[in-house]
Length: 381
Image 1 (tube, rainbow, N blue to C red):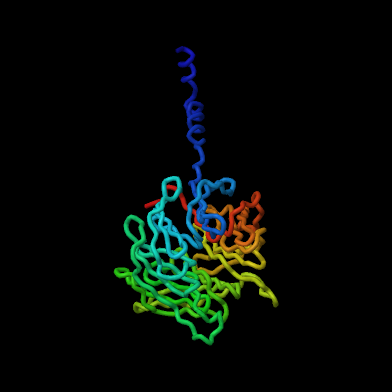
Image 2 (cartoon, rainbow, N blue to C red):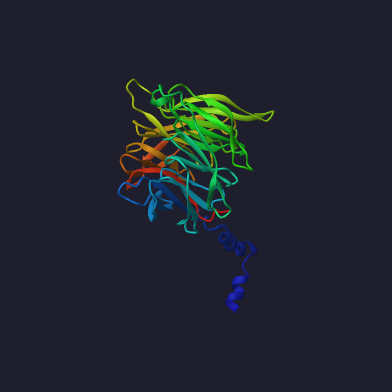
């Protein structure tokens, strides 16, 4: 006791130092846990969705599960984070996302048409939109509170220029996504070189044509993204490898899309076979990523959030053939490319301010990958 008493007799300053040091040495906050869902075609493999645990420290994937589904050409996660929806042959399927990221099948629903190529939901998770490349058909289905897919609410077939027109003048819908105010559905038609703007009746699920955003002839608008604040629309064009930026506004209850800029992703030299494919925002909307087949590269832009303009930070190869989709890991430290023709995923370490991207470990084999979605575990609302 005497020794202990002597110790406590030290100066007040000396006594406080260890306590202050101890309180300052807080453990760094652990990074959120994620899984990645990869949709694939299923020639010879019946498991069209692969599920991977994401190593956020090392920028790598580890396969944890796979789901039996045919030809999952595209997937989407509901805005409430509870459900995953997938294209499959002859329709769509819904899944409940479990706590560990695994998937439980809820139901299948037909779309009364050919297999779709793109799927998304409105911002209230009340409706599901399916884009049909092969038949040029937009399908709107209802969604139930338990995540199951209900009946078809509306169907729209895009019209061509007639039987004398060549292939590129026939409807090929490749994307359908809502504006962030949940008022208008933007539907990209590659064959007709325009984006149809449909007003959505939130009560019935019916859509009505409100406007048309026209792209250059033979440019083939493929995918559409909307800035985080909803003010800017970005359309990537497959044939011309360009991104068009529009400012979106509503005046007197009418939508306006004012063209701001066109960004050229890669040089289109004579004889080039380059085609643009993916378009995705980083999770914080600070960067916009696209991919180009032919040159087989990733292009990443920094987004000026004040006016939505894009500054190219890098244009570098993916070490694979036909990067059909790619995405930046949450946190912007890593990226992954889905190389459809070489049947691989390749991984990269990013320094976006310096404009560098270096290979991050060996490729991972996955047959005919189409689409990737990151999901933060525990994020369901």
